[in-house]
Length: 365
Image (tube, rainbow, N blue to C red; front, side):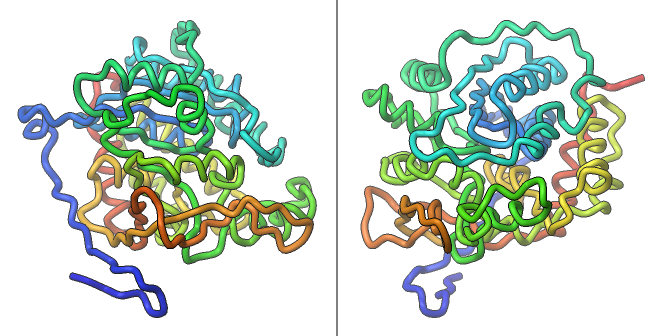
């Protein structure tokens, strides 16, 4: 089925992802090896919990960026805690940096403070955490893991692109041919961005006109636009799950009731959704964000719409009507980027809950 978007010379292909049961997938040696590159916000945490329950996913490692919703130290602690909670203590967790390649775009610190302890939930988890981290910086870990891989690895990018861009800069001989694909929750292509939306939602989140007038960029691009541009200009296979898709699946209290599992992982997911739709809600419409990208990566949705295009990123910062971080359709490039545009909110709710409600060895008594 082909659909041509009016006024845009891009062919839309309706993509069908076949749902295969976990045992069948595992029997055929098709378990997907995944590195999660994350800023460990509330939605990153939900995504990680989902993958811990998915038998068709092997989490190879986690690389944490401090250019995003959490400060680097706390984001790393959350990542390590989740691996312990999911009985994955040997999964490498690596620190990135809190310094983007260019600009100094940051989430409001009061917002980050709320994310740094998962809205107060971090202390209540209390697994026996071994806080020994992989000593390699995120970009070195990514490069060395790809270079020694005997099968392809998928990267799920849930924060800014800083870690990947630094890998390309500092380790240019990395075997990127060993990347199956990068799936990234990032950008706003044909819809409004969300930088101004968050900035203007609360007085304490107001960081001035650079943020207040940017109605074009999405936060994961905005935190490091140059890093995004470098990844876009590379040959790495890339699928974006931008706001164009995320805006179809909005966060709501109804999602809480669908998570009925009795284990620690399900309980944490339920508590996050309960807080984020209740006492810690943002006061603006909030998409589900990263869990949608995670489900697309994990073949957890039956179907969705995709367009393919060359993309670039605006790197021009202006005091008013700021477009920095806006995604732009480009005429040429090294490879086209797949852009997910349409998803079913109904199917997301059902399939997301189905995975989180699976029995796991971490069942609570």
